[in-house]
Length: 75
Image (cartoon, rainbow, N blue to C red; front, side, top):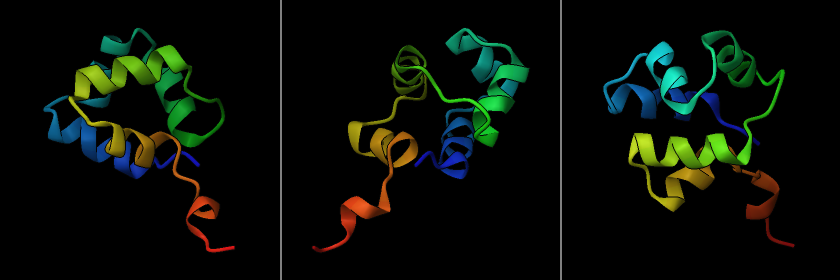
């Protein structure tokens, strides 16, 4: 499950506004808002660009874009 608050924090930590971040990953600000609200999903190319632009490691990338609490539950 996508965690928009974690992405927002990573954007701020990297020193970007959401508009600047959207431009850097090649989408419009309106598209970013659709992604952040969960109306549409990030594409794999956008996730890859975000990882590079925000200088986040794989662990943080997974926490932001692919966090699934069900994976953490014991069976």
